[in-house]
Length: 180
Ligand SMILES: CC(C)(COP(=O)(O)OP(=O)(O)OC[C@H]1O[C@@H](n2cnc3c(N)ncnc32)[C@H](O)[C@@H]1OP(=O)(O)O)[C@@H](O)C(=O)NCCC(=O)NCCS
Image (cartoon, rainbow, N blue to C red; front, top):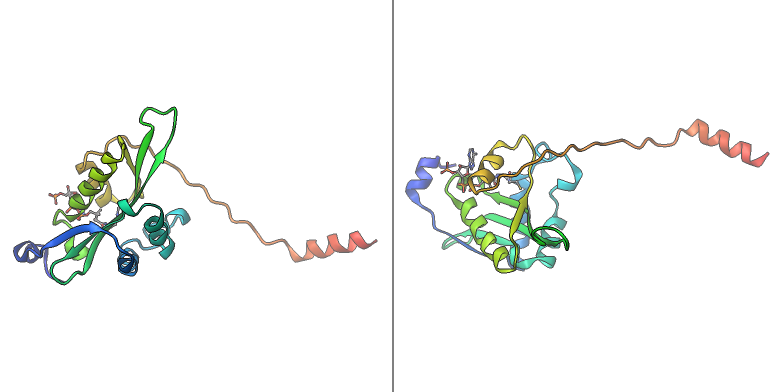
């Protein structure tokens, strides 16, 4: 893998465009490398193929990809949506659900370029506030979002409970008491 310096020197050209159906598999596989279950253990943030296909179907305008030129390798993407809440200050919100940049292209400003294009599209559709979330330990993403001007942050605590299987002994006892 080339060093960051070598990459900057080589200056691989990248182009940002809207995702197309043939890009779905590449985006999914790039996300698989970036969003590992160690980093995102919470189920709702689990990366799977439905994340890509669902956003592609519901919000194609906000599904962007970055590809190298001229070979067309996908090296970055965004998946986002809008949320409308009547009676709230901003009424229409953008939600940046996933943004990812291939490790070999990180720190080359590609994330910023992807985000800026997304923000432009969200703004044109009437969005005045954009929300993003990430794991509290994902320092790179937090610094990245702050560099983009995101500020208000609040911590959210997730709680989990394992539902135990019914105890076999108790089930038998219940069943037998029913028949008497
Ligand atoms: C977060 C992510 C998208 C950033 O993409 P990127 O292309 O590397 O970011 P950029 O090169 O545009 O960086 C812009 C600025 O963000 C900050 N930043 C980005 N990555 C950083 C890092 N690893 N450490 C510290 N600051 C970082 C810097 O201020 C940087 O500016 P600089 O390079 O001039 O110092 C990328 O690291 C990534 O794909 N991470 C894995 C997936 C992820 O966590 N996504 C976010 C949650 S959905």
